[in-house]
Amino acid sequence: MTERCELLITNVHAATMDPSLPGAYGAVEDAAVAVTGGRIVWLGPRTELPDTTPDEVVDGEGQWLTPGLVDCHTHLVYGGHRASEYARRLGGESYEEVARAGGGILSTVRATRAASAEQLYRAAEPRLRALMAEGVTTVEIKSGYGLDLDTELKQLRTARRLAQHHPVSITTTCLAAHALPPEYDGRVDEYIDLVCEEILPAVSKEQLADAVDMFCESIAFSVDQCRRVIDCAHKLDLPIKVHAEQLSSSGATAMAAAAGALSADHIEYITEMDVAAMAESGTVAVLLPGAFYTLRETRVPPVDRLRAAGVPMALSTDLNPGSCPIASLRLMMNMGCNLFGFTPAEALAGVTRAAARALGLCCSRGVLRAGLRADMVLWPMDTPDQLAYEVGALKPARIFLAGRTVG
Ligand code: NIG
Ligand code: FE
Image 1 (tube, helix red, strand yellow):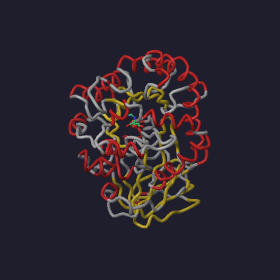
Image 2 (cartoon, rainbow, N blue to C red; image 1 turned 180 degrees about the horizontal axis):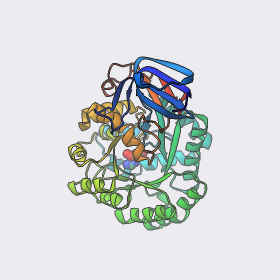
Image 3 (tube, rainbow, N blue to C red; image 1 turned 90 degrees about the horizontal axis):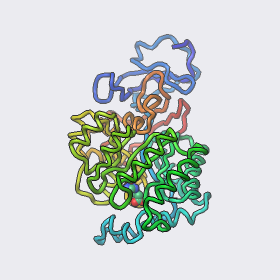
Image 4 (tube, protein in one colour; image 1 turned 60 degrees about the vertical axis):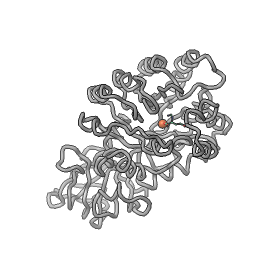
């Protein structure tokens, strides 16, 4: 470390989430953290801190410092809401039945097409702010409620504009293959042509997406149709993610793993072979307990098998108007433990280290380590187990984005 540093945090315990350090949290108690140029330049026991002259010192007051949280799967830019559909589902209709009757995703497509860019922005802001207030410093936002060129671009531009005006890092994903728009009824392959020949090339030309996603499911697109989208993404040099095996077993996860996908998301219905394929390819399992909870699903993803195979497991909100209108990543940590059998330490890894990897960002964030971005949250707690255990009252004491205090 150089003699001068911009920020020094002392009197703090660090839950680094660094897997090369001992313990589930990679904890360094009574630590010091030095930051310069937006990056951590030194982290270790305070007693070993080299001589340094900091521009600013923050007294951590014996609190815990974690990596900034990463919400790696959201659909938070959308028009309208689906409260009446929620009531219908509580009355006994299934998610598939609502979707097949023209509601579900298509109802949000109608509202998103009708909304102006300004309306979409204003509707998305409070959702984003709710996540940021919980210590989320990186958020992925998908399109997928446009399903035509102009509206997909409108959604993605809105996500980029949110990033310009909020102290948070936003990655964007084009999910044009989310559902079949009504104007393509009976012409699924022609819609995939539109996605591959017009939407994705235009999105890529304007550099509006950092990844490409697709919904591989009986109510959406088949494995073969998704393969075409993957080929197109590969040609455009964009990494892929797949909504896979949420409602049924389809081969989507094996396809995703074989294609080197960053992540396969939902995956309640995966098989033993899929788990092995994910372990082999390094594809992250993004588990979405809020969607499982909201849709009152009963099939739990095979967390024990994923853990045994060493597949990294992320947790995310899936924030969207249908399957999870819940803007709380902290609640997802709690649900990950209560509903899916995560340990509190796995839940924190799921919203930091594994989530960063699901976005292809594990070289820059998700762990507290010298060289990585200084996205960090200071929490007034006695043990990091409290992050999964307590929801609502335990708030960040301070949030740093690239070393700058933003909350
Ligand atoms: O991740 N599964 C597909 N897409 C979203 C839900 C979208 C919606 O219902 O509006 C999901 O659950
Ligand atoms: Fe989703």
